[in-house]
Length: 363
Image 1 (cartoon, rainbow, N blue to C red):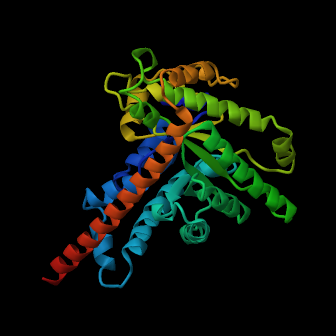
Image 2 (cartoon, one colour):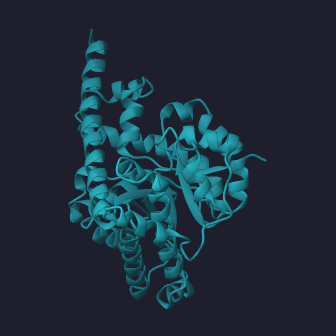
Image 3 (cartoon, helix red, strand yellow):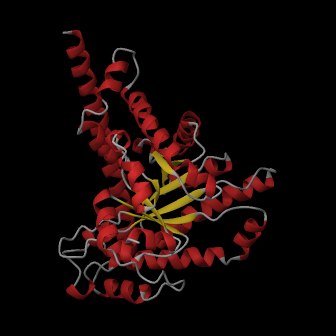
């Protein structure tokens, strides 16, 4: 039994933070499901930008759509939904066996909608309907403008992966949006079972402070933030408010650890996965980290419900002159900006490739 199997046995879901047509066509994703206990996957604009721009796997599909008048954005979503629908079908047995708790894939709305609540609500519903898969999440960023879109989408019955969360406060805001959406469904006589996950980004914290943190605190900020958010999650599940919803048939919004690939070459390559092992959570990781963890990962005993030493570690960072709350806001804004840049690069590259392929077909 390798480390991924042990982690799965402990009750944590392992998802792949990648999707490419090559992964599907080669059978690699199916192999990861069998060999590494992978039970879902996530995607984002950067992943698709690299997948489409860095290979010829999509050329035939792009060539077939050239000249049909579709916008670059419409063409992209067609390609992405094709991939994610195939992946969703691979994970459908897990989804069915877990009664919809696991076996999910994720598609993000345009990052250009990060500050557009109404536009996000509309596009989230349209994309989910278009994909026509019960195990496909729509990703909405947990920005101030995204929070009301999350609530409205949950109320509308759209499964949501809340992305770009960087702190306990961000998580609580996303969780409360989820609760409000479920409460509105119950008040309206609707089924309270609408699935959601809250994705907290880990490694970017340590990248942001690598030149400011003292050696004793190196690569400890992301884990401390995660532990603090985990405590908030466990407290929410113990609250009377949640217990009332659970009694009505609602499901918890699961915690998902995102950005768990180690960025510091001097640190263990399974640092975050080992530290954040624990039941009833999800870890989505890039292929390199997945393979490393399967080979030599050492999952920890589980996440402490009381947050462990998170408060002490965070206080040490504050003492070192690092304003953790301000940094959380900055990381969220930078994350949204980075996805928007990848999105623009993706669409520009797609437009250029479409023109080249159309020209080549006509010559």
